[in-house]
Length: 66
Picture 1: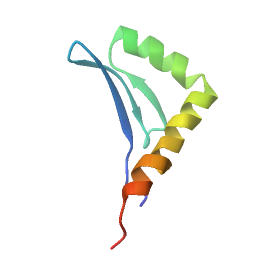
Picture 2 (picture 1 turned 30 degrees about the horizontal axis):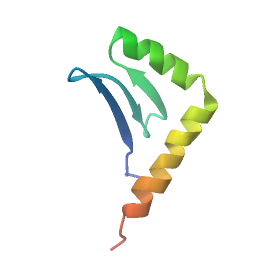
Picture 3 (picture 1 turned 180 degrees about the horizontal axis):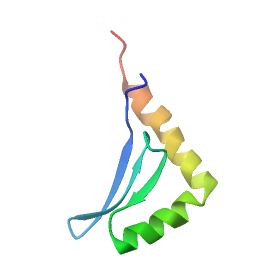
Picture 4 (picture 1 turned 135 degrees about the vertical axis):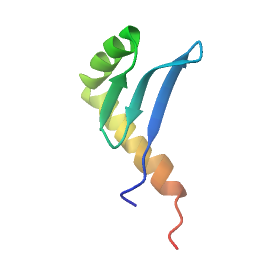
């Protein structure tokens, strides 16, 4: 279960500007706008906690062990 990855990508006009990656544990910005927002989101501990909880709630809840 440790190899499961939760990714939240944000797009505007078909261009990805920011992404939360559970393996990295923070937001990463890909444009000037995305970098500014990623810094703001990464400085908010509750935002990071919500995204980490999403991995457990969404990804790990839908995995079937064989």
